Amino acid sequence: MNDRSHISVILDRTGSMQDIRADVVDGYNAFLAAQKDTPYPATLTLVQFDSQDPYEVLHAAADIASVPPLALEQYVPRASTPLYDAMGRGILDLETWLAAKPDAERPSKVIFVVVTDGQENASREFDRARVNRLVEAKKRLGWDFMFLSADLGAFEDAGQIGVEFDSRLKFEKSSEGNNNAWAAASLKIRDRRTGVAAKVVFDDLDRELAERR
Image 1 (cartoon, rainbow, N blue to C red):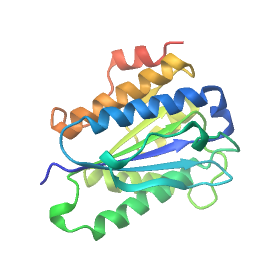
Image 2 (cartoon, one colour):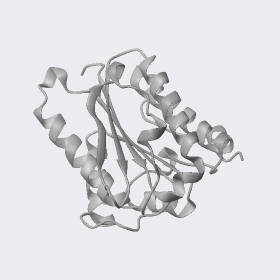
Image 3 (cartoon, helix red, strand yellow):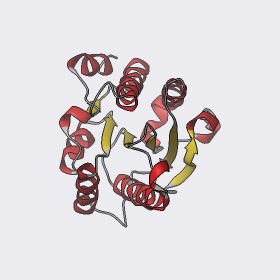
Image 4 (cartoon, rainbow, N blue to C red):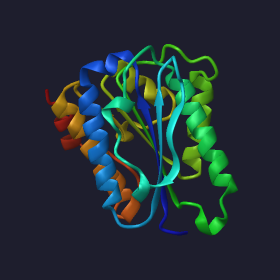
């Protein structure tokens, strides 16, 4: 095993995110900066999704040190929520990329992060059952799945697609709630990448801070 990690971020860019548009950009950029400062090499994939473009890849397995901050002009909320399509394509694309890597260059830690504020309502290619099968298969290979949600329904639905409760975090749709959720995710991923933690797990303090208005 090596010390390389890969992080995929699947970011909801749907219309209901407009209220926290700037907060999401700030939270993601703080997350990115913290991961750049984390020891050990990593690659990062960033995908935005909405029903006009269910899978817009901004960065594909890029060296994290070379990934620029997300600009506000790049993140323009619109349309509805093809969550399953974004997750399914994200998993399959990552599977293909990993399979093509030589063993010595394949990351030993794969962390798949979903950030959303709403429930699935627009997917055409994937359904809940198919995404669940993909998630369960990748968990058996050691992938970590994290789910950050400002919507209780989506938070609960994530359990139906295989994301364990400990790896899900509901956040208040506010500047503080958003920022605290990104900060919690960043710390858990840092601990996972550096070997401090065996998996990504949110605790009661994370949940309390993420619910702040």
